[in-house]
Image 1 (tube, rainbow over the protein chains, first blue to last red):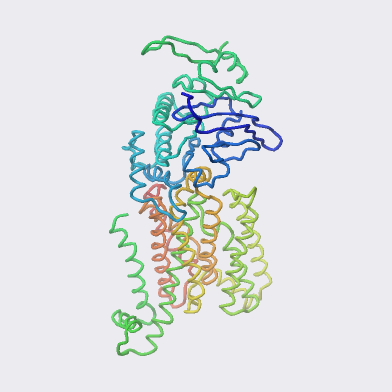
Image 2 (spheres, helix red, strand yellow):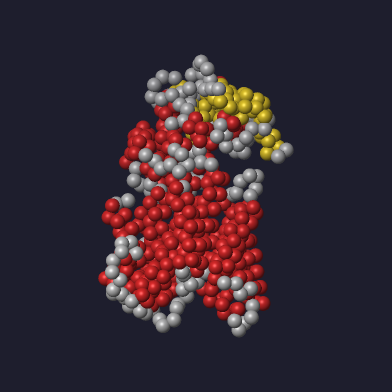
Length: 265
Length: 333
């Protein structure tokens, strides 16, 4: 983890909504194969930061570089071939099938008048296999549960074949079982080589599948490091503005300890 | 799509087109229609009266072809807009094109212009109306769909008021009935000349939509998602608006207001082939062609006079779709 050249380099990033500074002078490196969790309370600007990295929003200052490319100067198609983006769960109006939704991930590889080729369909089916939901292939996307929909969007992003994947609150509407399933899948996919950068407002997610954590502080700066270093009583109580305790218990399976946190009185 | 569906989808409008050439107040034998059509491709002996050929080639054929393309174009436009606005209640006139075209036509009628001039004026007003809507909806170099819908409501209300004004000042003995009758929609003024005027924009718009139908799928998932998949959403929306506006303005300018087709045919299409625009747009196009041609055949043969299209599209369509709505319990599946 966190060795070698970073895949994505964020340097001196700042963003403003009108006069209000959301974050400023942020530096962040993202490495191949890692899960980076951007953690912070609701409305702290973590989604904004994620959108800036993905190029959906334009930074007021600073750059996001990927190799030799400045991501903000790429055209939408080229950017979509490098960065995949999962938005927060929503139900679309029309009942497209799971396969149709997954094939949409191939769009950045087509021309504006293009149609998916048999190869695009094959890649989409491969992505469904990777995530393990091929059995949902012909189901209407609108009739799936929130957890299943997240897995479909993950498949779609895999079919897109970007170099890195950004996920905005991928677990926010899921029950505990689906949260675990979704995080486990994200961890497994990152291990295949693509970094996964996700936002969450629940620090426990960072403990479940430990990776690096970037904690967004109220002043709009980041505190970055391994989960167990960054997530402490002091830092959590500071960013959430209420007393939060970090606890550890013996792991049920395997050696070592398992950490979790909770509001504490 | 299954092959049988594709064959039926293409064969239905063509079969009805052929039937439309021999039904009417003046009956022509189906075989004679076939020989007349053939004689226009390949020189054979003319053993029929010239008047029969005139009826088939100069009156019924242009009218039937126009009905098909207007129905097809409106249905394809409705499908594209419902996808783009992510709302199944949207019809092609949502951005005010119909209201603006109707006002243009009323002005032409007030000024006693001929049919061709009316067509040009109505078409131009339709394009201008949507252009206003687009400018009104533009914020921060983007056109959010909610802004488009609201701007469309405003522009449509404005042109509707102007239309009411035009009716109010129209001579109630001659001009007012002409405007009222025109607004109800009819294809009885169809000729090879009106065909030559209306077909190019309808065909160009429909072709444009067909080319963009995969991107429409992606856009139907939401602007943010489409953008993250590399779709240039603003250019795409502008392209779809241009295509549907060409189609709708041309349709209204040549045959008045034909409601209902653009709203309901897409639902029928989705029942048959699902929401994927790759199949839905061609399917809507073909059903729309068949539907309006059928309605127009009824309009010109059911009674001694002509029944306005605007009345029949809903009068025949409403019970049919009421039946489908009940049968599918609102899911259209």
